[in-house]
Image (cartoon, rainbow, N blue to C red; front, top):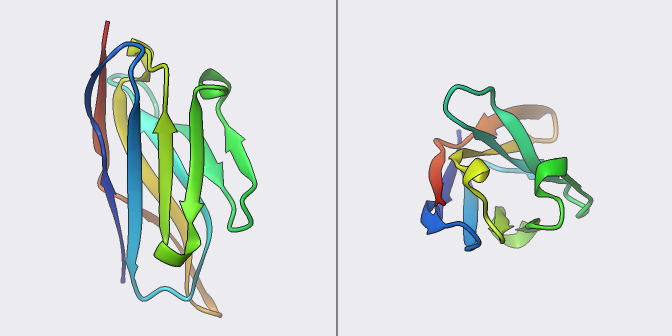
Length: 120
């Protein structure tokens, strides 16, 4: 099996910063794309940012210029640096990974989520 464990959430004032981490462990042959999603109360889950194994990134318009996604392939870890946080960034942030456990096996995995709360 594969587990994704997030850390780094918390309570921060508007304008502040947080860095989220997500480490993948278990039987891993390779990891393709990794990404961060968030879900605010009463809203649907949305993509925040994702990154390919080669380092190509994609961001939601609402976070461009404020958030940076990067990964350490040697550690099977993806990070989300969040700066200039706004109250509307509040939500549960979940990590997602497209993992090959072998050359012929590919599955999508989710972490349990970490709460980010931005106060005004």
